Amino acid sequence: MRLDKEIVDFLADIDFESILEEAAENGAPQGKNKELFRDILRCSLATSAKIEGVLKEELKNNTDFFRNDFYRSLPKLKKFLPRYSEEQIRKTMFE
Figure 1 (tube, one colour):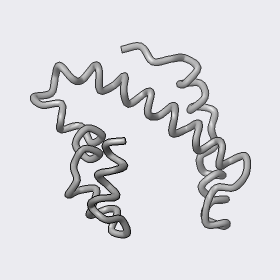
Figure 2 (cartoon, helix red, strand yellow):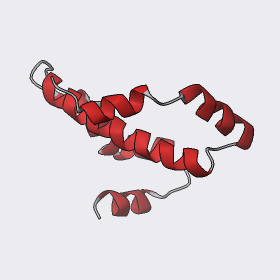
Figure 3 (cartoon, helix red, strand yellow):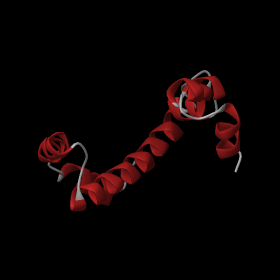
């Protein structure tokens, strides 16, 4: 498996401890760190997709993957999103 060098370098250079300390003090990442969190998430999702692609053949059932299983499971979503009705969740899932 070959990971994108830019993504690997980007993630390797991040000082996660200082970002988490700031988030703990302020209740959430602020300003530049908020944007950095978005970039981290984007890179992490791209890397996860590559790993899933490689492991897909080795797994019995690819619905075991968290992303495929969780985000397509209405009962699981309802458990973690109690403020939203089933109708609101369905609407969001199928838009």
